[in-house]
Image (cartoon, rainbow, N blue to C red):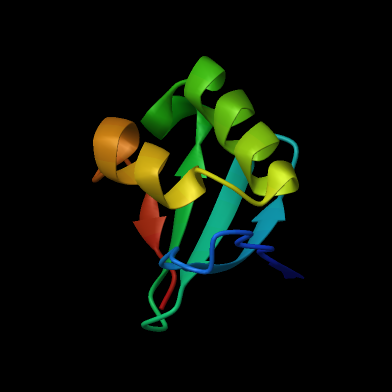
Length: 75
């Protein structure tokens, strides 16, 4: 997984992995979730990928928009 930059040092996101039709997000508490284009929507998935690459805003977006729209909890 790629470490999340967290420029503001206040995110709950620790790392992410972007696949062709999914993004896995690992939180600092150890929980890891997979969001897919089917579960969260393609536009949201693309936006999450942009935020992950930027290292800013991913945790807030998840809390505000996709929250429990993950496809599976991985850990």
